[in-house]
Length: 311
Image (cartoon, rainbow, N blue to C red; front, side, top):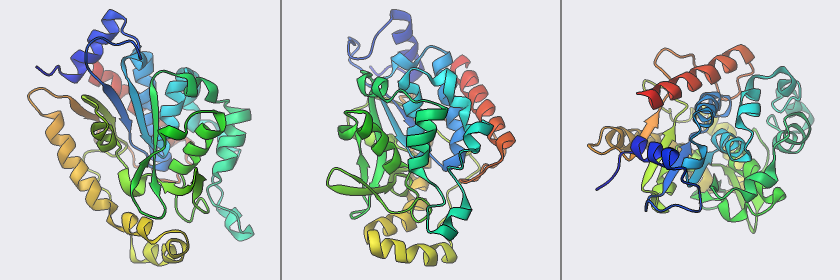
């Protein structure tokens, strides 16, 4: 008989079960939604999981875009030290997002600056610990040619591979420059094909999935505007038409995900569950630079996860 997700996590914590040395026959995954600055919510949720001592209860961590960044912090072993840095002035001062770069021919969102400067010098990320962690790390990206979701876990084998996979998963079309090459293919933001990365986890054999959302229950993804399609058309014509089709159709995927997650959460034996920001929590835009709002989102995400675990 299936074991409810929260029971399975509690049992693993109680028995001291360790990743890579399980005997319960389960495979429990964490799936973290992205959304640019909106991922502050999932940062708080991820922080709460680590504070509750549950990190080692998972076998795999899947993350899309900002969700992949949060998953990386979790697996670095330093989540409690650095996850709040989404709202730190010294990180904002690094100008990872700067619209003025557009006038100099640079990307508005500079992922190289994030991964190779911020994560090296300001909030040092232990990439070697991520690679060595027995919990599998699965950054999700979108193939720029086919438009299909891609799990970049096979490339997270060394420090540079982990860094490149994070850049690929977070490469917002147009805003972050050209697609990122990983191996012999190029990739863009995973949100175009699998913004809520639980489907890949299930397809790869997860028996239980805890999904961390960055949208409230009353928020839905909306189709791209006519202006957005016009601005992005040249980019996708140059770098991959199929990825453009995925971008235009992503709101349908979100609708399907919402229905499936709702059904999974309310199942008699819930093995697929989601945690969302609370109703009434503030909207956080993808490129928000309002540190007070971002900090509030982190704390609300943290609080709602602790309440979920205590419930």
